[in-house]
Amino acid sequence: MKKKISIAIIGSGIAGLTLANFLHKEKNLEIEIFEKDNIKNSSTSGIQISNNARIILNKINFNQFNKKNYCNIHSIKIFDYKNLSKIASLNMNFFNKKNSEYFCIERNKLISFLLNQLNKNIKIHTNKKVIEIKTEDTNQIFFQDGQMKKFDIVVACDGIFSNLRKKLSKENLSFRHTATAYRGIIKNMGKIYSEKVNLYLGKKKHLVIYPINQNYDLSFTGITNDLNGRSKQTYQHLSRKNEIKHFLRDFHPLIRKSIEKCKNIYTWPIYSHSNTFFGKKNVFFIGDSSHAMAPFQAQGAALAIEDAYILSKLIKNNLFSVKQMEKIRLNRITMIKKRVERNLIIFHLHNIILQKIRNFILNIVCNKKLLATMFFGKIFNFKA
Image 1 (cartoon, rainbow, N blue to C red):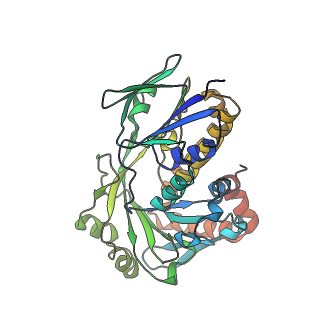
Image 2: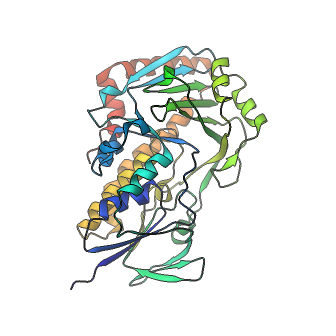
Image 3: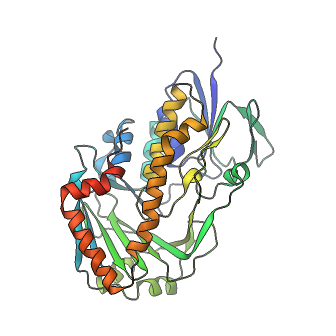
């Protein structure tokens, strides 16, 4: 009998679980997932999943998921953060197709869906932290508890703060010292935010608010480069009231009132990788551990899903090649990273004349299907 190929997936986030979903029915594979913590069920944030990733999730039955648990998005509205005057409106139906719409969801609802899809042959180990990988003929992974296991293929999906990447790539995260992010969930805000993402642009700051289910719960992310970022590498750091008050001080009162309804607001510094790293030998890196970027294009989760899908196709075809993964993925990721960096500047303009020019261009591009497709199509029209 032919020996099965052993695969270790390190991390039980969106990237790792999506990869497992595409591989778990392959009879020649033996898959184990290692998670350093418990797989959390607490609600801390929502995520946006654009059309390019929705098409991929549909291949693993997302269209059968309960529609009450997410919200399809049909428009992105852009406003001035002080007076709420509308700058532009992007019709997402330019890109939406039936059952392949842009959608927003609470992160842990998507995690639960991906977990529930897996068959019982997948071994999931929680509280099992990997501290080192040695790339030899067979990859050796070493755990914090002193144990060691060997695998033919290792896939690191351990997120933006990946210690494994640091050891294999010899590269540290670059930290945007002038950017700080805030996020939280507001319960039962009503139909006013239904089926749309609201983006509020301001001087050195912006705010995104979007629905994450059919109960009118909202997730928000606010980003400012007016304050010094925190150096603490965590997404679970509770914000102080004076921080939020300072961030919201010049927003329209209706926005301030909405955000103030949130009981727990979390803060974190904006980190990014200056270079994309796909791995070494038979050790692959995907998602944020490969190409962490600032959240100015809402593509973090989508790119992780794309990575997982592409890598699963390579594995199924016995192409265990980091170079092949790089050949397929690097240009697209580089293109999106450039847009992300550009958006940081565009969103936070403080010169009034430049703001007016930006608003004029946004209004033209978003309202014309041809222009919108030319500008955004490279991102949303991904062919899976």
